[in-house]
Image (cartoon, helix red, strand yellow):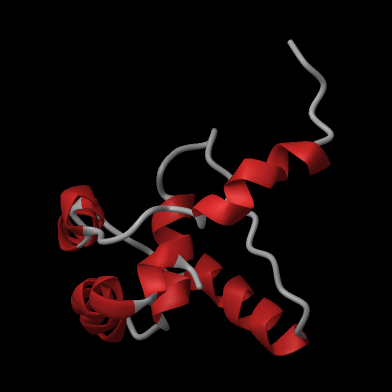
Length: 108
């Protein structure tokens, strides 16, 4: 049901995933480890918080800590995922219209 993973959007986004998959192979890691490593290299004010309910996935996420990226690597990863090429909305509209009801963030 997620807009980025259905129909023509899925087909377009598979191309982007394949680019990341190739880069992950180059760094001897999984695509998710590469994505987390990229986030970890974005600065001290960026902290990825991957959610998982399985120990296997947690261990895989921890593997991102050993992926070292150069400035050239970071640019190559960023260039592989041009924002303008990502197909589909970030979230499902039918869910987003109700999500505020469950928010616990206090008003400003």
